[in-house]
Length: 160
Image (tube, rainbow, N blue to C red; front, side, top):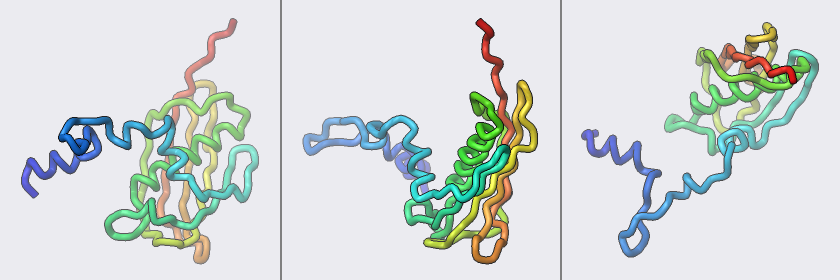
C-alpha cells in the first residue's frame, strides 16, 4: 500500500463530503460520549460479582471481529480495561483511577458466537495504586484466550 493510501485509510473517518463536495462532520464525531465502552460490552452478562472479583460472559459478536474473523485484540484490551476497572469498584473504592500500565498476552483466538468468560481479580487496591488481573477464556473448554494486567493510579481525594 502506498503512503497516500495509508494516510487516507487512517483519516477516513475525519471529514466526509456531502453531495456538493463540501466537508461535513463525520458520523464518528457525532457518536455519544463513552460510546466505545457500550460498543465493546454490548451483550456482556455479569455471572458473579463479589468483593475483588467479577466473572462475566458473552458471545463474541460480529462487530468485535478483526480481519481474520476472530475477536479483535483492541476489543480484548478494552475488556481488560473495563472489567478490570469494575473489579476495583467492588472493593469499595469510590474511583477506578487512571491507567498507568496495561498489558495483554494474546494466547488463542475466539471466533464469532463463541461463548467467552472474562474473570477479573484485584491483586492490590491501595491508597494510590490498584492492580488487577483479567483472564479471557473459552467458556466451553476453559482454554485461555488472553491474560491481562492493569495498573491504575488512584488520585487522592481532597479532604474538605
